[in-house]
Length: 82
Image (cartoon, rainbow, N blue to C red):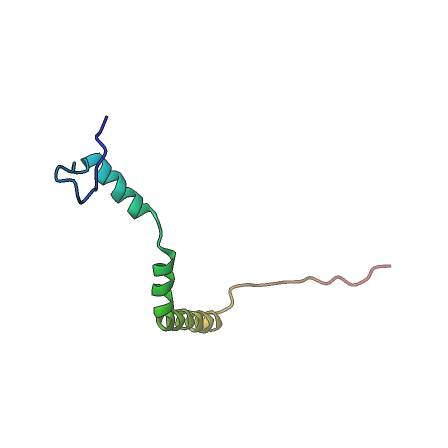
């Protein structure tokens, strides 16, 4: 069983955390999402995100209007028979 790490600054014989404990701590830190930081990054990049989104939208509309129509429809009308 691994020893528990003691983080008491007054204890001169504090036990260092084991490798497993450090790994678990790092894994927990990596798996959690800091939503405030994420929103901050997105908010600070909002102009770039808007410009890229707008540019792709305009390019898509232009390309879709310039492409030729690839559909063909035919209809056969028959006269009324009595």
